[in-house]
Length: 192
Image (cartoon, rainbow, N blue to C red; front, side, top):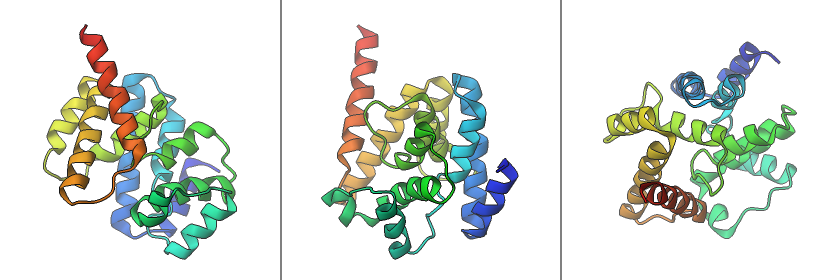
């Protein structure tokens, strides 16, 4: 499939605002990939596909997850907001035949992050936070961090996620804490 084919497919799976977001994430992913040396075409593809199942009914999302053989943790089972990232990776693998593990992980962990993220995973994680239509308190700080370094942007994004979820008394994925700790320790060690 060409990028245009993927865009057409994704446009058919979501409302216009979500499709605009996906296109913006792909565009921002390309910019960040060029800046930090990630594969540009893979970044664009992961960006356009990252929310492939965001507007898919939950029962259908669960079918994709089961079809891909993914076993959800208890936290993932009870936190439906995380499903679209997991089912999105499953959909891309099972229905589109994409087997590139880096692309699949970029989709799966674009909301939580995780320890040991690849360059492409970080690019998609940050592109989702900083895409052109994003307008939340702190987005300008996030964009400045993304222009400084991926690690600064990761720390900013993960801090934002942890603070937001804890303030709302919601569960936080262990992967998010692991990603935060890894990046924080990396930054601390660089200062020494």
